[in-house]
Length: 89
Ligand SMILES: [Zn+2]
Image 1 (cartoon, rainbow, N blue to C red):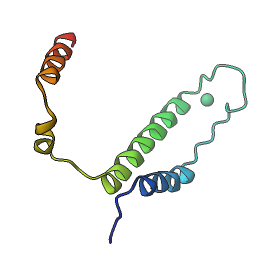
Image 2: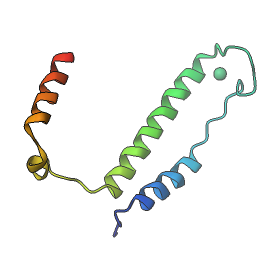
Image 3: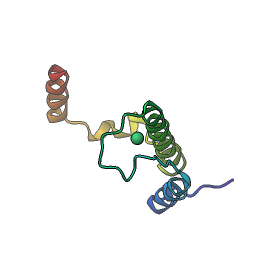
Image 4: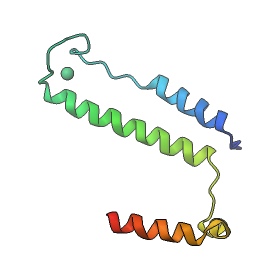
């Protein structure tokens, strides 16, 4: 199977899968706070489905760039920023 790596293909793929996701909650139209624990589990499932679709579509449509390909873009200023960001963690 041939996959064309394009942004349009990425969004098309995501759209196709997102349209198939269906999670309906009895509390959808309620103004009250939901206390149904099964809804929390369902939201976790929904979240994981979304992440899976995004990762799968990215794997299919976003070209992988090896880290070594970006080395010539690295500069002294970026080293400094990188070091500062590591100190913030
Ligand atoms: Zn609910």
